[in-house]
Length: 319
Image 1 (cartoon, rainbow, N blue to C red):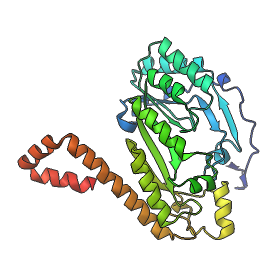
Image 2: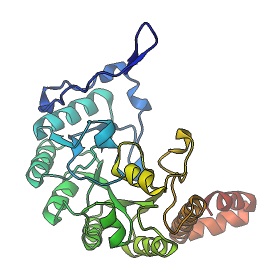
Image 3: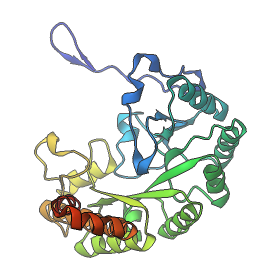
Image 4: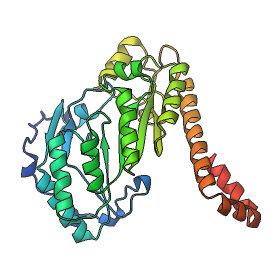
């Protein structure tokens, strides 16, 4: 997209996607302040390397904006595992980094490829902790064990809702029973697990939100992320929201993809969705505080007697 000499906005046609990602050179990281890039998810050691082993995603969740914005349609392409590990090894050594974050839309697609990648990491004895965003239903125990043995430190799973009917309405193609099974395996392997939930999918009510909170508590991840569903232009959810009159936002500024409700469901106004989001986050902050307190209760009691004002300040920031 660009403006010509007459100030007319011109939009070029999309170029074909590069099918063979191994033809691409690695990023010109020597031009970047590498130690300024941080992704300390779940306490991952920093500084770290952010990279990808694939592009795109073969699934068609109604709210996902990436296929439209990034790729101009549904697309999924992968890199050769050897090239991926070459980049990991050389970049980490060159910039003295201590961890890797894989930013793939869905890291764990293709069991054979993932097993080869993990085998290559182990063969070189990289000893690097790393994280990835994945699906809970595309990884079995064998794959997860291989990932853990190769240094997997923490993994993120998009769940969206604790109600199967809402997951189905979002065309997520995810069985919540598999989520429970996979999270159990991941925790058993000593890997930290982070779940993401999206409030405001088609059919959302006060009751389904409570069921989602109950599901999150039952599965008991190390951390969670709650956000409000945002129907970006180009997504199926945007078309649905427009056609049904659910879309209420008047400014694109409100489409922040996290905190602001730009639509209403049949049962919930934007204000109620935002109130539910605050409640969900508050509940999990309290849960995190309780875990932290009981694991370090002697320290907190001792510090409370020594410096009560500091403890009060801590409580205000975490409750």
